[in-house]
Picture 1: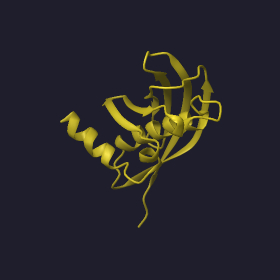
Picture 2: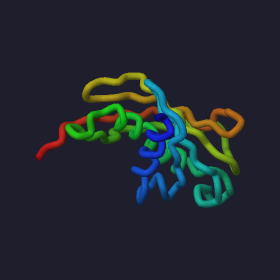
Picture 3: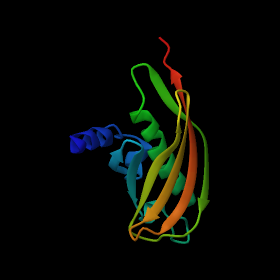
Length: 138
């Protein structure tokens, strides 16, 4: 069942920034979602390390997606309203993993803590994302 949910989630990312950056959702649970992104020259800054903007794109993607999958999308939509990031360590190759965990899962607003780590589980960045859930109108 989990494999099917992951397959559906990743297929929803076709023709999006997530596909462009090769972001893949790899795990989820009751209070978290994990995605990975390869660190290649396509996400490097000019001096050959992971670009902070790519890291933030990964963090916002995984956090917004986490809020989205815990929402009744027939009645509501989710938007990111604020993100902050502190970059701790540089990465040149391999993968980075973003784990979004809910700090607050309210009916209207959500707050997520997103830790970005490398293949060796070193902390790369810490991000906080606020999302809002709003009703769809006809």
